[in-house]
Structure formats: structure tokens, C-alpha cells
Image (tube, rainbow over all chains, first blue to last red):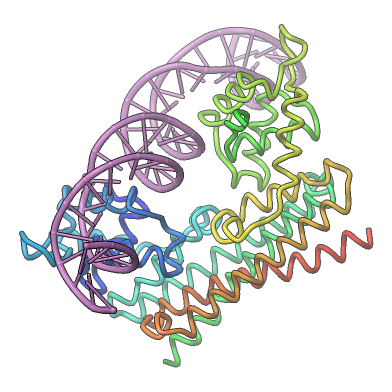
Length: 179
Length: 179
DNA sequence: CCAACCATGTAAGCTGTTACATGATTGA
DNA sequence: TCAATCATGTAACAGCTTACATGGTTGG
């Protein structure tokens, strides 16, 4: 595959740059003033990540010199973003990288393909319901009986939370179909 | 202060060892078979983390030699665990380290102080409601209007999710008071 | 005796954090 | 002119993942 060398923050940057070319500073400000803050913080990670994307050929700065340079996606960048966006949601992603799944969904409208978004949400919902079922099984089983009250409550939080995510996905499918 | 050198996984281990002395292997198995899996994976992180805790003097192995050695907390380990458990929940923890807050709650009954657990849940709920309010404000404000539909839906997921957490905390307070 | 499970690690490398540091532009 | 904002980085390090590697014990 070669490609890939992109991490979580890298994908967030690719998506943001795709929606509108921006300077490093503008990008950094987004991370300081919007909920995308969850995906990083501060210059120490953003600038190096941008440099890495540039080095790998996923973004370029234009005009090539001077002030007011903005990052743009290259074709390779577009392709990498698209591939990342189109992957279905798996159990592992729901269980351990829910934030990445949400990030992918937020950018998925870039493709301009509503069916792709609906497919995404369907796989998201299915994976979330499956994870909910496995947590419920755990709570009902032998291991679950050994939990302290607070241990059980903590697992129940996980269960409620993932059901909430599944319900969100169901609702989002409706909203996408309407509007 | 000096102390601290403990990371996320380290605290999970301290808590598990406190509830019952265990071998490295037993600890590792817990991470492979229970929902605490969220906090790590596989030997590559667990064994080094145990070594680090031992080096820092938070745990010891007993008997000192031979097979069937189990990890136990030292006094320093108990103190570190207690300090970590007793800290109130802040906005940052809700927004970016919710998993750590839940881990802390799961182990908090170790202290045998129901009031402490109730205080924890109260601060948890307050921080979650505050974070919900800030997300709602974002969605209503100028920045929120610029979002694409899917961007908005993604933020709404965050909002619903944190409300779900706050509601869980409210419910958990009731359950603790009853039982 | 052999398979399954118990048990413990190392090495390389990637990501991201923290803390520090610098300088240009622009409006009051 | 001076404060605020725009703008961009570096260095050190922490923490975790992945992949690899090894050997002991025990019951059938």
C-alpha cells in the first residue's frame, strides 16, 4: 500500500483543508475555538503534522512563496481522504475510536454522495448495536456478577453511551433522507 | 511533588491490584476479556507499565521470589491511588478524558466512602452539563451556522452523548443512595 | 508426550504533549 | 509606539502499539 503515513490529526487537517484552503494559523485557530479541539491542541502538534502531510505529498502551499500562503490538497491528498472516508465502520472503531468515526462522518459530505453517508451511518449503527449487545452480555454473565456496584455502573455508562450513539445514527439517517 | 510518573494505564493497574493482588498475567487477561480493554491492550504495554510502577515504588511483588508472585500496593501506591481517586471531575476531563473519569469512578468504591463517590458523581454531572451547554452555545452561535449538515450532526452527537453521561451520573447518584 | 495455557518480556517506531522561542503585521 | 493578533516553529519526552520472542507448567 505504501501510502498511509497519516494519523488521526493528519486526517482532521486534510478534511479541513478540503472544505476550504487555509493557512496553518487558521487551522490552528479552528482547533482552539471549535469542538474539533478534541482532535488536538496547540502548535506543537499541528505544524509538524502539516509539514508531514506536505512531505508525503498530500498537501501543498500556494502561492509557493510569500505571505498569505494557503494549504491545498494535492491529488494524492484527495485520494487518501476519499479512501479514509469511504471505509465502513467496524466494531473496533466504535469501541475504541468513536471520535475518529465521528470525524469521518463530519467530513463525509465532501464526497457529495448521500448514499455513501447513509451507508456509513448504517454500518455505524450496526456496529454500535453489536457493541451494546456484547456489553450487555458481559454484564449478564459470570464476569459481570463479580463487579462491584460502581464497576457495574461504569460499564453501564459505556452501554448507555453506545446505545445513545446508535440512536443518534438512526436519527441522522432520517435527517439525511429528509434534507 | 516529585511523585506522579503514573499514566492512564498505570492507574488502571493500581486500581485492579488494590481490589485484589494479582500476577502480571492475571492483569493482562483482564484487559483481554473485560471492558477494561478500553484502557489498553497486550503485553507490550502492560508489563512495562508494571515494571515502571515497581521501579517508582508503588507496587511490589510478593513473595519476593519464585512462582506465584503477586503484585501488591505499597503505601506509596495506596497514597497515589487515593489522591487520584479523590480529585474532583473537571471540564477538561469530561471533554477529553471521559474514559479516565469513568475509570476513576469504577475504582472509587475502594475508599469505602460513599460520600466521596457521591461528591464525585455530583462534580461529574455538573461538568457534563456545563460541557453540554457550551456545545449548545456553539451550535447556536455564528460558528455553528457555518457547519455543513453532517458537521452539525457530528457535534450534535457530542452533545447528546455528554447529556447521556450527565443523566447517567444523576441516575447513579440515586442508585448509590439506595443501595 | 504434547497441546494448551501460564507467564514475561524486548525493540522499533509513531503520535502527540509540554514547554519554549521567535518574529511580522496592524490598528488604536 | 505599543499591544494584540497573526504566524511558525523546535526539542525533549511520554505513552502506547505492533510485532516479535521465549520458556515453564499441567492435565489428558
